[in-house]
Image 1: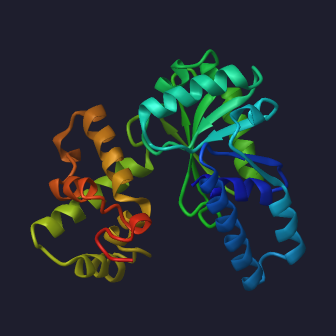
Image 2: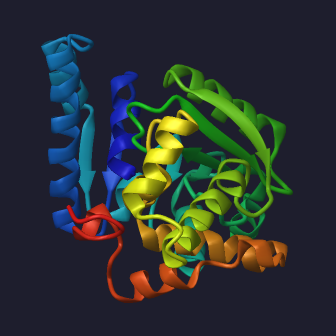
Amino acid sequence: MGNGIAQVFAQSGLDVRLCDSVPAALDRARATVEKSLAKFVEKGTLAPVDRDTTITRISMTTNLDALKEVDFVVEAIAEQLDAKLDMFRQLDALTKPGVVLASNTSSISITVLGAATKRADRVLGMHFMNPVPLMKLVELIRGQATSADAMMIATELCMRLGKTAVESADYPGFIANRILMPMLNEAFYAVMESVGTPEAIDSVMKLGMNHPMGPLTLADFIGLDVCLAILNVLHEGLGDPKYRPCPLLRRMVAAGYLGRKTGRGFYTY
């Protein structure tokens, strides 16, 4: 999601430094941003000159030191606690003292991430929805030590990005995934128990419940490994068996069937 976040920041007139340890990931990010902006131009919602200006505002680097002088950080690495803790320790040591460190995490505790730094009052959750350039919502998560000032900075930034900020308390899954993931998990169980085919289940939710995308198509889009990681956080954090990840989901992830990004999930791509 990092390239989508970089794109909306750049489209809003902000200079962006997009950092990834893998050069190929940066190449893919640039191609993805250019393709996304091209679609806006085709639809007539973005002028060609604004597309070109947006691209020039994004600089890419594999060197984390390039973030030393930034004024705001959004972390969007893998949804793994240890990796995020290590990243926040590095960002805390690297960036200026007053800089807000935001995480795009979809389920991991902001309080825990903040505790890994010496600026817990400046650490918060900024959970964008995917695809970032199209979705209006941003969940803002206040950790135990997050200051009102840091939340205000993030809220005003969301307004500049053209997003609607909704605040959530720091509970596993926050608001969006606390509600969404149990629904997806039930769809996984329905497939496992042969209640219906993936096509049938998605059709019922689209045509009967007016959802724009069926739950299994959505899960493939999110990434089945990400769905499993979030369900594990919900199950472990809340201790309620209703969040237990479906065994079929576990098997699919173990087999490498992760959805669109691997070409195979509940559907083949």
